[in-house]
Length: 123
Image (cartoon, rainbow, N blue to C red; front, side):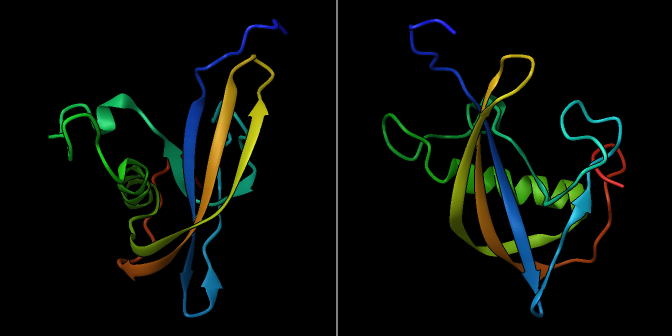
């Protein structure tokens, strides 16, 4: 690895969704590039399209971008609305393809909806 710092990370946010003292886990679709067929919690990658088309909250910044991404990803992947998002921990890795990744893991309470899996993401 080069001595120059690599600044670009793939940023992922995930939610451990809690309802009535139970936790939602799903299995990643076997076709997924990373961790296919493994058990996990819903979430997804931050993309610039998640905020660049929105008005900034201040002159220079968009606020609560990760929370917005997490709400969208959980809704898309498992059909649930969530609330009370709280930070748990972060994990970093460099994948076999050389891409550095930062995962931000959160807890969230179920707000509404019934589980409906997005088959391209989870089975």
